[in-house]
Image (tube, rainbow, N blue to C red):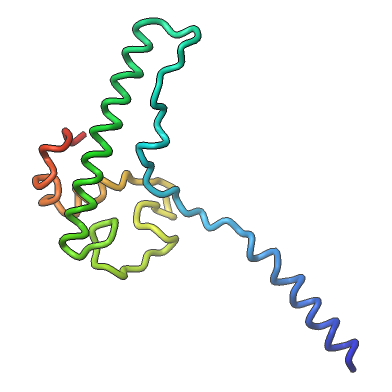
Length: 129
């Protein structure tokens, strides 16, 4: 009888183990400005390419400032990172990923669509795309 119990426990463990490593299809979280390249590559880049990379760095800084303003506004108003009441739960872990279509939405676009007052409050930090 002990062997039968041990076999059943072992079998159950084997059946459940593969289910734990399954991907959920959750969209990646918001990107932070620290992941953007801070310095342009120096090898083989033309002067125009270097200027374009410098401009993208400036946009990344403006984006970071706008995200900081939005996050502060959301926290001040008791809302979560997506502009919904604190403690909201989302299918797939985020409202930014539509599981039916497989499309992801930018976090700031999502917030501005649902809370236009945030765009007005943070308009001075960066231009809205």
